[in-house]
Length: 200
Image (cartoon, rainbow, N blue to C red; front, top):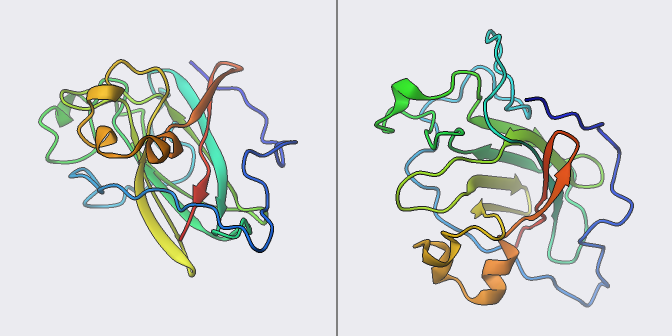
């Protein structure tokens, strides 16, 4: 399955607009890095996780465009912010030696990617809807860094049956929880997930 999405400049109406100087947006809640951050960054670590250099077959699963804006608490864009993601493949397997099913993972899925925010603070990844594994709901690990701040957190998805029972998501107050749930909509050939980041 292929995700066909033109790389447009900016959305006409971004979800997080610049705020007045006196206003302060709440920082995106931090969450744990988890045990599966790559021990070694793969040679192919770009923002397109659907194809791995040297692999003929694309990633299995539902393609998804994960995109958003990185901003400071004053609403100002943070161009040049570095954003990393790492996640399980369609079967719920990570690219990590501690994953007991590593030998079964999808070799066509990159598993890790990084991108730089553009001049408007926008970042984007081509990835898949992450698979499930025991004990967790669907999620993508994300780290964002800029000279003004750094954040490690997790991105969740709406209407997931496991959200209410997830050990990390349920620890958050409702308002914080809402900040970590992406806005998901159908897109040409897959899904689009919007997730904005506010660095403290």
